[in-house]
Image (cartoon, rainbow, N blue to C red; front, side):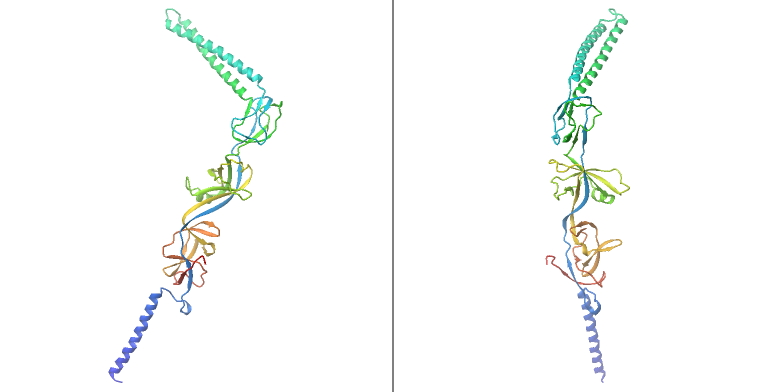
Length: 374
């Protein structure tokens, strides 16, 4: 074989090698995928993480309590001459519920009024006399006479103040003959009769319970406390009550305060919420469900089945630039079997919605954006 022919053969051989190398490089750079066994690149279905708003509802067992509840008991003793209310009646603060016999107390008030009137006259007379003597000077009255007039004036002033105090006490006792409602509420059973003698030692004459507003108490853990009440005037947190029949109370509640210490036996914290209760739907000692509804903005909903749970947190598979990735989640909570997570996904990142087998993060994949309505 001639030298020229051998050179031609070598040139053809080198050209074929270059073609193979170039084709391999082109194939590797234009697929953005790595090969599995057999050279097949896996296909995965993905969805775009769509930012939205969501509401998470946390449920707790709550106990309804009256903010005010008291037995109506007289401050003074006497016979009942009138009963102005009946069991189950809704009353207002200051309404007269019953009246005690007033004769003795009215007489004592009249006597106190008369005494006060007389002592006022005595006070003004002694005052005028003492002031006139002071103006006349030492040449008219002796120092002893001036001292006596001053003493009489001061004594009259003291007597007048005592009379005023006596009149005040007599009026208070007279007013106590009226048994009045100390707050708005609903009366229970009336356990007193006309003509019955009652005293401050009497018990359970009638019970008054405040219905509106009313309190609901429920318990949360210390972690839930930090999650729910880390902000003041939180507009994204609503407090609702679900009744025994499943209905939701129309009025939302307001968190008034929490207990001042964690219960060491239950590791929980009592929370006190108040609700308007104009129709008396909530009744003391009833159990209800308290719903804490928190609104979250700019979140992503992910099916619970897609979560990958690890010791350091929860993850989900994503595809970023054609490469399988494992993405750490910050979970706010669960609603309707979906996890509400922080939207910390990049614009070109997609969530894998199928089970991943024999693949690991860093491998290249073919991905197809699925229509979740299919």
